[in-house]
Length: 311
Length: 107
Image (cartoon, rainbow over all chains, first blue to last red; front, side, top):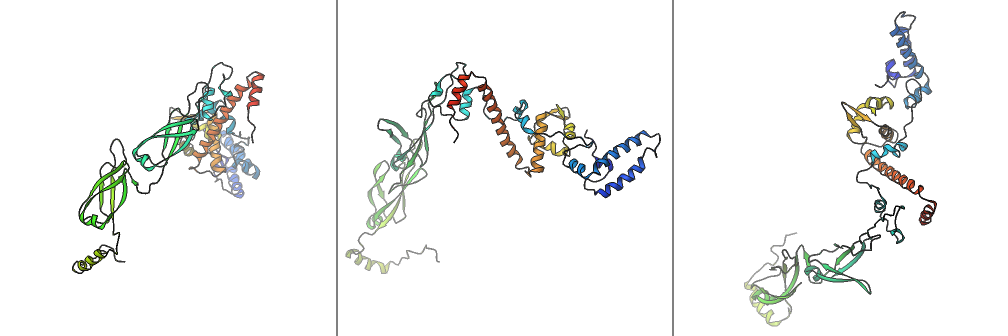
């Protein structure tokens, strides 16, 4: 149990002034003085502790040192606790962070600090004759692929130097900035350690026609007035080549036509190509067209801006 | 082992509830023994460290685990480094000299 503090013995608050403490002490001393309490050993014991408490609190320097915890209630120096000798001593392992390195052998030490090893380090360690292994370093490359290659997938050859290359399989639907890992294609290991990996950051080039939305590919396709109004069968570029497509009679700018499974060529389920039509008049000064419209327009009033919000 | 109340006696002015909370927060490790908690010397020194951080350096409750976590990592490194140094010190002179030569200069 903790010993009573001198404040508790005198029954004063730790914030009490020197004058208050002196007054309380005098009252208590009168009450418990041995000469006034003959034959009462408990009063004498109480008087001793009161005197000791007052002795400490009446000396401003001692009181201040007590308040800072430098000395205890008997005036003895308190031990200073320093964490470092404990932390670095045998008991310090108690606070070993979880998941930290366990350096039970040198291999773990090199792994913990990511030592690259410089050839000379492959030899026997610590005189024990036991070899230690170091995994090779990862190597980083970048590879830019065409939009269509990213959409269909395929093999690309990445040149590392005139006589060294990597064959990279680009999966269909790879995204710009995605990283491919080729196991074992990095730097060689030391002392029988595994080689590292090659990490290839893939960039997908933009395309003048195609735009990607998830697994679908969007394209804007110009059509003539006649093709839109009368319908037509035309050819459309896709990531897998040109295909023919029917434009239904009475199409318009903004009509979206879907070419199934002509989008990102994912093996599980390919995306679609979405074709947005854009009507292009082409020859506005065509006299036949102008004349027929002059006859046609007055009897066919049409507000092309009726769905536009009024500002 | 040191009992809970003895820790309070040794560390002047330490609040009972506060120490209980630090143990609950796992800032300090203690072993439950019957209805009391038992500490080691390293734990008492750590309790004093936490108190100094809070009282003298105004580290608040949010930041204490962060500071303790960093300190634990530093001391872990120092303990491991000491192990390694002890192992190196036990090597024959030629091996120690070879290691010394292999140490890259610090810029």
